[in-house]
Amino acid sequence: MGFLDENKFFVFCLIVVIFVISIIIFKSTITPSVEEFIEVYWELSIAEGLVKATYVPCNAECSVSEIYRIGNIQLNKKDYNITIFDSETPMDYDSLCIDFNQNGVYCDRGEGPLKEHYTFSIGTNFFNVLSLKEDKVVIAHYPKDLTVEDFTIGFVIESHYTDPVYLDVNLLVNETLKKSEKLSVQPKQKLIRTFPVSLSEDGLYRIKVSVFVTPSDEEVFIDFLVNKGSSQ
Image 1 (spheres, helix red, strand yellow):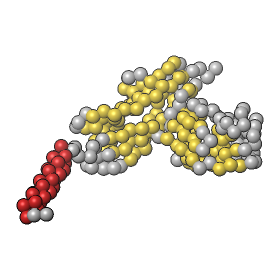
Image 2 (image 1 turned 60 degrees about the vertical axis):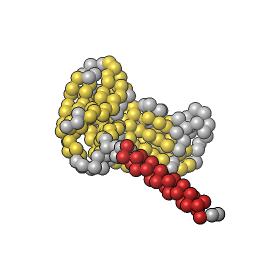
Image 3 (image 1 turned 90 degrees about the vertical axis):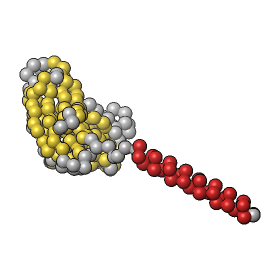
């Protein structure tokens, strides 16, 4: 390679390097910074890693295969033992019992069997079985159906801001404001909150938790539908 050819090659490489650096600088100037936002979601309780058991004290018509899955789950800040089983078709895990009285016997009165999307309560705290699988149970802290007037729901507020933010947190029933509170949330902080709800009449209701970030007025909300029926 001659001297002129070497110079041309050097100039070509230099131009390529300058071009690449220019692209990197350009992209860095137009790429937005990491997005900051508030995340709101329903408080979930999850049981995973359920293990097989061939004998479980069960006070009902339980597993048809006599192969259970057992584990534990935290509800309302308390740990409970649970079992899931196949009540109709072998190995089709469709039922859940929770040992609320902690006596080691499952499916006592009020402990199940619960199916997917069933509602149950612990005191005034109501829960909904969101998902029921062989290896995983997911329960949300809100009801789907109920016959009482007063109940409590649970949700989580998580900050993805790098600075403290102030929030207006509102509870709405069929778009009517029922409760409001102001909160200060620190960077990367996660808050677990509960709201009492009261439904005096039977019917279908939309329950909504709305969170406004001040002073931007950014709104984030979650909601669910609940059917209140008569206890008679």
